[in-house]
Image (tube, rainbow, N blue to C red; front, side, top):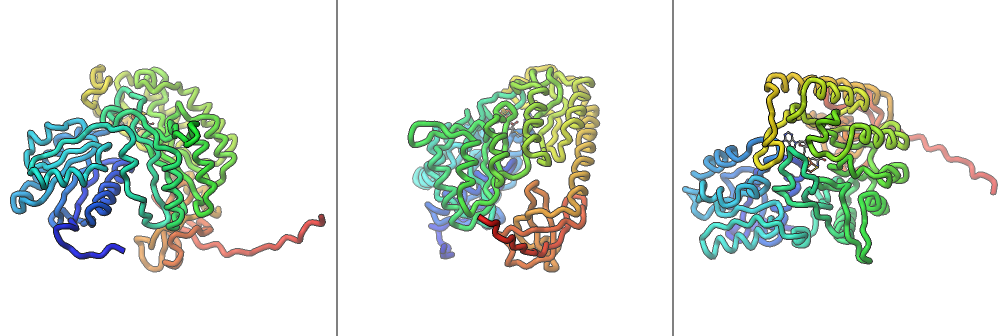
Length: 460
Ligand code: SAH
Ligand code: F3S
């Protein structure tokens, strides 16, 4: 559809992305917005770009300095080509704002996660006035309104359903950088999913900092929560698998658990960040739930989905975590048997409440703790993978395997990669695969041949 006539009106954009799926999603949207409004195309290196965007993340590291050193590396490109436009977006942009242009005056645009839809306008302003722009406001929902229609690439797609977070965990910058929780209207979400389904998408991941805090306004004035949304999405014939990320234990409602019972399309996997297994630490973290609440939720879920795969986020070394509190986290890992986790050493973020708390456990000790967490979870992961050998898994084939040689690769419900001998034509389709071998980070399998048993009709 898009013609590749290259001139000044069809700029080439390079986007460097740091951080999570949310940021990858935002980067894709930046390119979409510029593609729609300016005919822009995405390029793979900064050297070939007319516009360079840096989409930053500051959740777990001191990204500020990293931003300036990255910008320093791009400065020669700008010196050589004054028409090059450089923009900084994302969380660091919204935290630092004008400071970025003060320290790096050659930056043309600074924009926050909620203003990326205004990029075309910012580009015009830069071209007209030659002056820099800083636009890091939190305008309510109009980011979603201004987004171009989604373009599917392949059989899986992300759909953002809410933005921001109002939980204010002690350690976390998200509420300050992305603003308070705001849900996208139900009709908009459904329309986007309808368009994706029409383009052949089979798996939808509903995306947000706190997706189970979704409270989408509906046309009749009522509110749709995540459980209800999942049921609506499942109604689309083409959509055969539904995932969501990330959710919060506090809002892991009975209704959502019932959705697991009622909606087979809801993938048999849950990522539910717990952060700590100690009630004292959870309280210091302002997480709003107890270990008992978390366990109770999981037990209730397992009553309807006994073999569900469970993963989590864990922070070690948060202020207030001593040896006993850490052991409580190990006990919880043991009790739940998480088969995957993102685990991190606590990192103090300026402006968060935890930054003012005493943090005096030695770093070396925190590293040992992190390793214990990771080693234990690796064993549970290994167990899950070996238990899968001999089972048949429904795999959504995504692409040819990196291994080559006629191998295809796809993912199971539990988000594990499977390689198997197949045909490129299978990409974008669900295939039943018998798992034959568990490797460290992936599975091997073979296509299951079908025997169709025709049941005789029962007498009326
Ligand atoms: N909405 C998610 C969290 C998103 S942030 C939730 O419900 O918790 C992703 C993860 O980064 C968090 O779960 C946390 O484990 C980690 N994280 C956030 N801030 C951190 C910090 N200051 N230090 C270490 N890890 C952090
Ligand atoms: Fe951060 Fe806690 Fe929200 S970890 S994203 S403030 S739920």
